Length: 135
Image 1 (cartoon, rainbow, N blue to C red):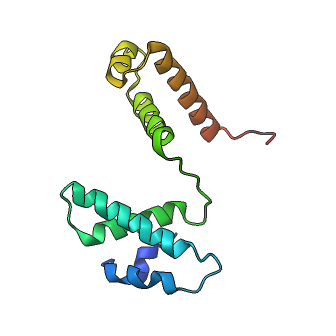
Image 2 (tube, helix red, strand yellow):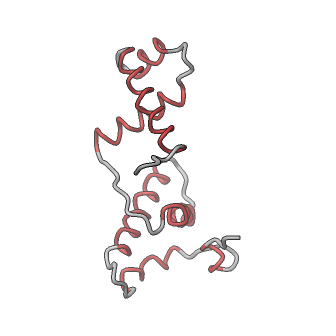
């Protein structure tokens, strides 16, 4: 059974001021403390804009992301490409086979685009579930 990293902090309550000292940690991957601070700041700002002023929540989200993605090299697109991928995920989640016209109007795209998005997302799902035997 895997122990969550938050167990290291006892009761799970984290002091956000801990982040102030992370950039001084010695590590061969010296960029990660800065990235951690930036990620925390982005999450804190987004939560605050939504009226959620719980200082620990952003840090808990950072820990959850670390639990899930820690050790991976991750590419995250920005701008229009990121927004398009998120749109495509919404289309895929809402597509039921009979609502192509509704989705096309809702997302301001053509019906052909809806079918293309669903084909691409279906392929991604299949690839995720059935790894390539020869790769």
